[in-house]
Image 1 (cartoon, rainbow, N blue to C red):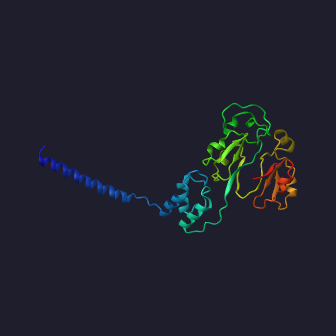
Image 2: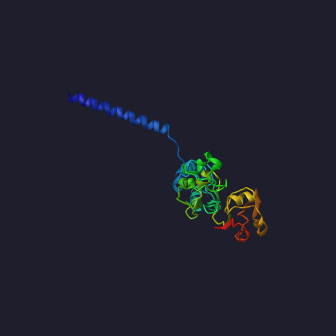
Image 3: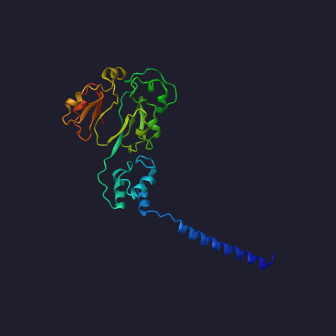
Length: 265
């Protein structure tokens, strides 16, 4: 090939490259997606666990919602008050008071206290129990099955199964709600971190039925209600419930409970 041909080819390639570059530059300006700088700053402040405990599709979804004013600045349950304060500073608003919460398993019917109807040898997953007789081998249809579905879904390694009942480490728990969402028995709830007295049972069966199924079940006797000086305990459907906003942690309910269902945590 002659020198002239080489120079001509190089010139053509160069000109084409210039036009392509100009075209891409113009296209980039025309189709540019505006990004809210506050959204990026909020995303950087969030913990990045992408657990979905806030109700959005990961931290990026929450950051976008906060930037648009569609979510509270303290909506991240994992980050808690420290992250809420950082996000509030970015958004230029008051974070308000954020109460730390933790997950609690309302059951103490372990292998020594709860009766069983049969031995189960299938898949160790609580969610599979809807396909077996009576919803699982335990006589109490409201009791923890102990197969660890909550353990599997917890992203913070805060749950263990001890003697057939799930236990939450309140110091490791970040209240993401994964365990609450995935427990088929609905035994797990988010309670205030400051709570000291809890009802360790979820049964709503009548007293005789509960006592036959588990030695540690609430029988709805109402002794706790009568002995609470703050009127913080009620009994609904044969089951005691503590109002943690009223409870002062005096322990009178736990002391008088004949079945020792109300425990101190």
